[in-house]
Length: 374
Ligand code: NAD
Image (cartoon, rainbow, N blue to C red):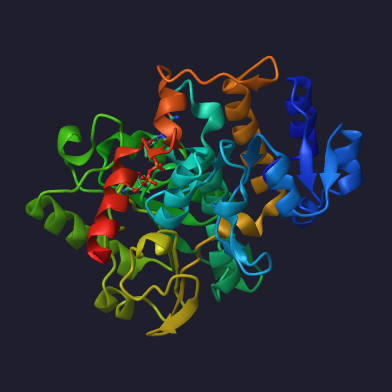
């Protein structure tokens, strides 16, 4: 749910009328009545809601809707504003419709990674939840327990967990696996994460690269030289073979997820081991991952979840709602939108306005698909 009753109250206090699609909060255990107590009113269906609204707040991008027999982007009122996880490069059809209908659209997943924008960073919120839940999923599938136990029946050694990619999701996965008592190692190409990994009680097992070779000026990983890739891959495969659980979270912005665990490394893992591939939506870090599915290959269970945050709806809603509300209020002055295009948060997240696709990457993708069709 994109807006909790707590946020609805805050939005109302900023001067907006809040309209809610009936039962939209059900999946996160928020009833219509709780929203009404917070000052929101309830509209019977999305059609009416969208046609009456100046600003639509959503989680998912507008998609073709069978029940409504229309593309949702066609239902949003012309000239209004949409704020959601638009992922414009993956939803270019929706972006084109929004531009044609002169909708001003903002994509929460394009939020700049700056201190000022931190409260609005929905990607970090979802990664935090996914990192936690990936460990819970792994613990549930592993035919072993995580902690070391010394019992009358003898000593049980702790399970070994390897986290590949120590960004937001990876760090949360390290902390969760440590709380469950596992011995945790973490692999990343960015040397800058070593200290953070160690402060969470895990061992850093990444290659020794120069900072400028491994990350860009924004702190994201960049594509590595072939030699650095070879070195890193060798180290990584040794660690994979030793691990009971491998959780992969490695991504490079704008590119397919790096392929880090080939099929023959999976074959070398102990029978019963588990992989949770959090990069499944971007093609996967493991060669055998099937996005959205769980498969067993070489006696290893491989999970490829694509919407893990959605399996924790109460806290995922709470965090997204706080992010999206902070963003709306950032754009608001006295109960209406006040868009300052010189502000990097406003301009950096905008995908369409005044009938144009203004995000350069999305425009290129739209032009590319038009040329391909021609
Ligand atoms: P991400 O999701 O893009 O990537 C996840 C991790 O995968 C990263 O740690 C990356 O280094 C790693 N990775 C990429 N290629 C790899 C490879 N070949 N092998 C091993 N690991 C690989 O990253 P993220 O979690 O979004 O965070 C990236 C950076 O941005 C971090 O430094 C984080 O602290 C920073 N950040 C800043 C803010 C803010 O200031 N508002 C918010 C969120 C994140």
